[in-house]
Amino acid sequence: MEREPSETQIRRAPTQKRSRDRVDAILANATEMIAETGSDALRMSELAQRTGISIGSLYQYFPDKSAVVHALAERCNEDSRACIAEGLAAVESMNDLGTAFASLIDTYYAIFLAEPVIRDIWSAVQADGALRAMEVEESRRNGALLAARLTALRPQADPQRIEATALLVMHLGEATMRLAVSVARAEGNLLVEAYKRMAIRELTAL
Image (cartoon, rainbow, N blue to C red; front, top):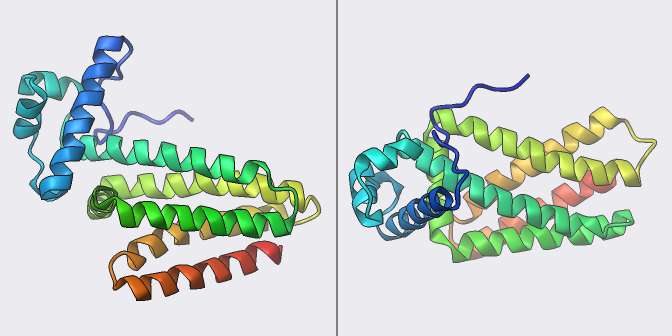
């Protein structure tokens, strides 16, 4: 069943190049503002001024701040999905899977450490009940990518068990990243390594 558009999503999907460029400019400025002062301080009026458009024009695309954060998070999600799909594409054995999965987690952790704005965006998502559902849906999408590869490697395994394990592994990966970047770097590194060991152990036991 097709879902009704959420008020946390973009209100007017851009189809013409001029509109797409405007949305890109809005999101680029929002990213800069969040990097400077955090998502809590993001104001729609200031975002419109910085982008060089009227507040009415801004509202044509984004009904509120949550919609802006949603769009930024979704762009991060799209990049992550592409990275996961690429990382799993060449996997032909369970050993390959363990190596590829560990590499993906290392890459994701490095991005979280290098880009504070991403951490702020995800903090904003966690603070907004309407946006938290998006995180679950994203875990399902990423879990489906992992489950598809696992099914190809383990065609005789229980598909429901594969799907449940893949979803849990991906969802806990997000939680691990948030915890790892909220503590001292040395402890964060240990947490990420522990997560990789646990996840790979579960995945290769299927």
